[in-house]
Image (tube, rainbow, N blue to C red; front, side, top):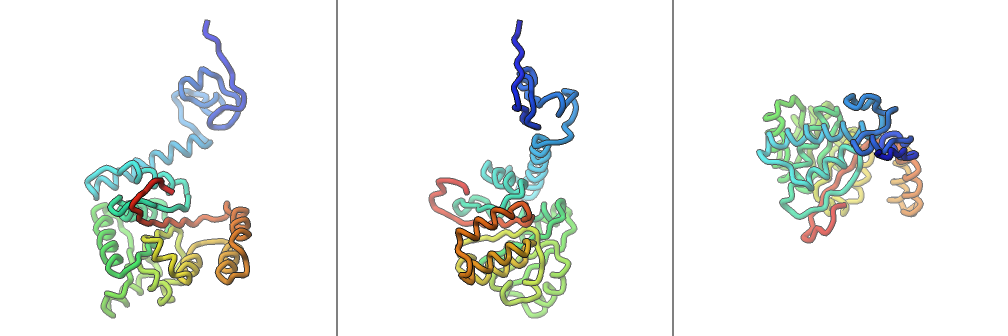
Length: 265
């Protein structure tokens, strides 16, 4: 006779009691899933299930425009992004950091209704990335407004890009343009992608402009400003921000290259 056990507070979905029989089948407790063939209605396992579906959707978009499957590292970045995390992409040049950022940007604007900003170090890169993004958007039949502003544009082109920036779904520009153009700096965004974090961090003023564009609580904006003005030390600032972390809905994803990528941060 098989011995059946009940594990106290070990249901992977709700944390209540669950039988060994249910666990052996990969199922949560009866309260979470009364019908073994039914669908979860709540809990962290439902979030995981929905996130996995999103990952599959993003991979389909990726394959459609890139004509290849995502690498394991790119899937890892996608998973973190869908969790709502702010994080750093550290990987060698050619690892597909920019490509996955473009895909995530398009996905966010189209399906999550989030306004995105991509910051690149040079005007040449802004031109290249924006063209690639518009090409991807066209192939996917996404009806998105993409505003691309950089110094290589003619005066007429600059006016055209600025004229649509207030209703743009995606803004692609340089950190210098953000500091120089009030029309860009006054925009509010939900997700910020920063390519080449090293060059970005060398411009402390640019960081303040970007944080202002993100939808951050006023308290956090004051804390960050206090750090830059040396009125608050970094340790105290981190502690205060940690206490208000749940109120932050905006995401910041930055990328950088390294010759020896021993780990992904």
